[in-house]
Image 1 (cartoon, rainbow, N blue to C red):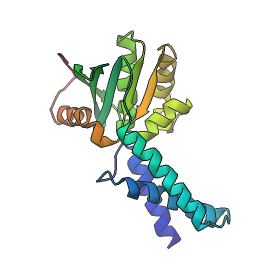
Image 2: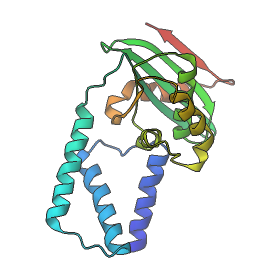
Image 3: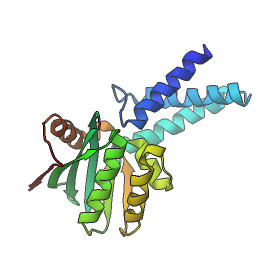
Image 4: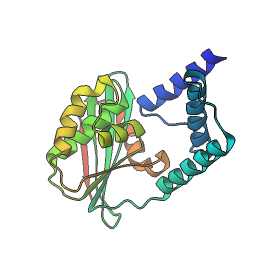
Length: 212
């Protein structure tokens, strides 16, 4: 039983590491699943006995925070939506940029050699930091591990150590920078763009750029 639960945890972590999400945006399911796994680990490894009232309070608190993320207003002079797709060693990142009024001002994709979508998203973000000199920018992504890594200035996985180092250095030079996690349902345009481009057979580094 314990081995099955450990394998379940590994599968969930593996999906997050690859930038994937669960099949549906079930907020209650995501919240309780994560919390119960954490409580089980504490009880099994640390012999910490869970109390019903405490657990219920934690569930309510996490659900409230998650609801805020689903409906949060994305502030910034420019909001940059980022998502990535991966096939083998080839990854593409879809990037959609809106202005302060929510109007789309630029859409483009960048193709990289990367093993995981997380790595491709990191390169895409670094790439965009280099070509624009903006202030008050809000980068948004549905990859929680990437967002947490940037906010904490910690490399989430050794495979992305090189790009994360370059990216964090570049982000330090951007004034009034924000990085925000959003659910996949709010990042559909960037997600569809990355999936579309990776299904096209290009031989070289590709950039598709549209100005609106």
